[in-house]
Length: 231
Image (tube, rainbow, N blue to C red; front, side, top):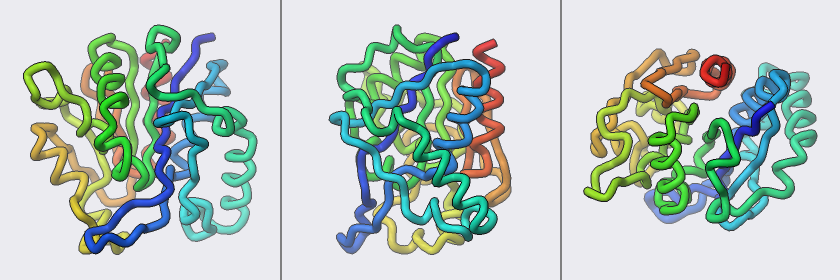
């Protein structure tokens, strides 16, 4: 079968407005659930990060309260440990898009720190969008879209409908008033149309070859939509 590229944040923190570092990384569920769906469908997975650093899972994403209890947390931790591709990622700058049938970006607050300003990631996203290949981005992953600009300086995703972690969810999560900026606001400022769903409920938006999800609960439905596009 084909190969799918996971582009994962290399950051292990998110710098807040007061300069403090909030421990973060990628959100485990948002990597595990699509990974399992893609592997079950027979696809191979490769992981790339900025500089090829081994990505850090957000410790919060492994907590029982975010996984339906201890049993769920243990299952996610075990699944994460089985994702051997995470331990030897490619360097993002060395990725050849032609090697992959689809591209997927999980979230977590980490992308707000690095991928939001990563030119290599932005260029890859621009190429992926133009290629027509399925491109999936979930939760805070759409922060990476902010680094995607065309030759005219406008955002590559300007005019696209997307789902992304909302201001309301950031507020309910307790970090909105501590953040330097909010994802929904910044995407809107870039000309991207954020289609808001109910907080914490699965919400996926499909616009051409772009498939986006609002939050961790959207990871599974997003993966299903990507698989449909892969045929």
